[in-house]
Image (cartoon, rainbow, N blue to C red; front, side, top):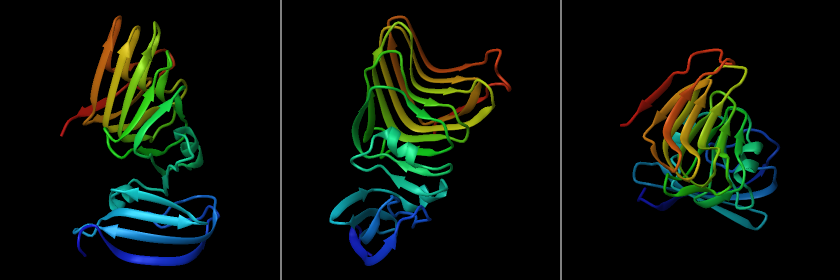
Length: 239
């Protein structure tokens, strides 16, 4: 198949009732007729998937079906009408949430309290922007969470602690949070922390962190207090 050409065109009826879907099919609480057009590259990898239902069309591009499928669970794409918090809420344990490209502005912390994979379209393609002081852009309180392929721009730092990704567990062990291929930029007053593991551990790989603070700046911080149930172990690599 030539790169970028339509390999298959399928029109079929499918009812979405929370059941399993194809690896690169939209998962939604909709019913009706679905038409899909899938484009593959010369290595037989899916690079574009267009799904249409009830007269509305959504186009997903540059997604490697096999790589996303390897993360496990269903693959859930953020729709144009959803916030990041809403699409994460729609996911179930083990699912992979694919965020849309572009800059998305948040005013509060994005809470991640279940084991999901959060994947952007690239660290310079999916950008999460926050200017609200004293927040953690991502607040992770569950084990087996991964955050990949996105950028965080935080300009709301104040006199408190201002964090790009905060992994925090007051009562149980978290040791498998994975942060890979992420770009974090924090600027402003106060204490700026790119990634903060509190009573928790995990892996950080191929991640760019730039923290500019008038008080105190940290790229990656690991910290245990009296509530910790295990030692903090953070694996850091570049490849």
